[in-house]
Length: 106
Image (tube, rainbow, N blue to C red):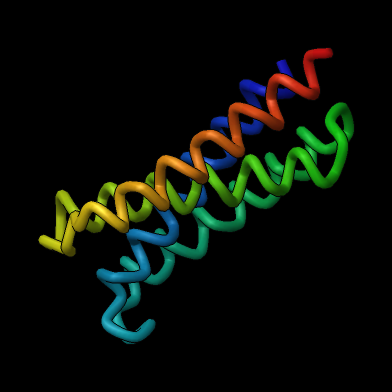
């Protein structure tokens, strides 16, 4: 259950990070409120997950999933570049998350 909570926390982190793009430098009220709310919920759920998972593993997985999701949505929504080097770096983050998860299971 802790891993599921951590995934939901990471999803909120992704929504918050992408939402910041729509705030126009925190000058638009509703997008700002949405982004801040989403980020707050992400941190709260991260804290809940950390009750049951090691802090280093939980935080690394949370930030890693957040980075991956944010970059992928940046490519899809904002036409950010999807260069081979960038995709390889994302693959390395994915492999690190998988490795941490496997180590946690053992």
